[in-house]
Image (cartoon, rainbow, N blue to C red; front, side, top):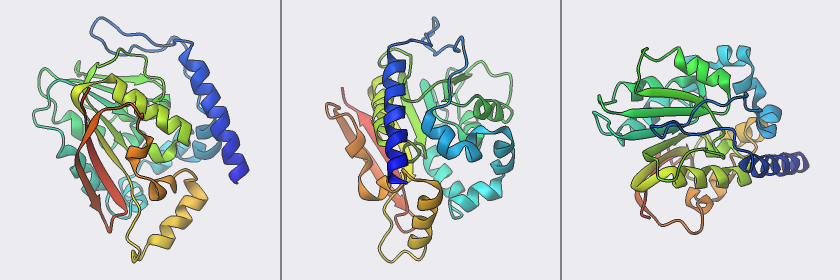
Length: 264
């Protein structure tokens, strides 16, 4: 398993670095990411490890059920979703970027908080996830765009957004891609803007579900143990100037929320 993961990491790192030199996206006059001319390839690690959860249309149809999503997060989905919404003022103005929208459960709640002048851009590397999310939104809504885009290769200008959100994305990325995706998120946030992260966290030693979660990681989430061994800030770009405004943990420290302000 370790050898295979090393192969996936190497392939994905090569894919990302190569793709950075081959622009497939551009901005329109408003600074938004526009659609690609060609569909993006599914990253190697995602197709190898997560096709059964995110990529195949039947998988999306099967897993996109409130009780299953809540079960995966051990009954904490709504609590963690509420923790996100606490960080987004209502009405929400300015420009917001949601990086990954798996199953699209949180996105409609964010739509409800948008102000009249808001811009809300949602990206995902999988078109099937964008299509699934679009069906859940109130349409038409000119404030919202959904664009196929790789989180590690955001083809938009520096300092384009007031805030960004990653909801349970870093733990699904090989380390090189995780670092690149976080670097890209901070690159496109304006100085003074915020990145909100919700992720796994090392649970307390006495947590009754600690071994169960370890087993889930072993079977289904091979990159997730990193969240137990390292702080998320360790994957930030070394040159980044930032401030941790908030760190909160939930359910015996098994989950965390970080609110980070980019200083410069």
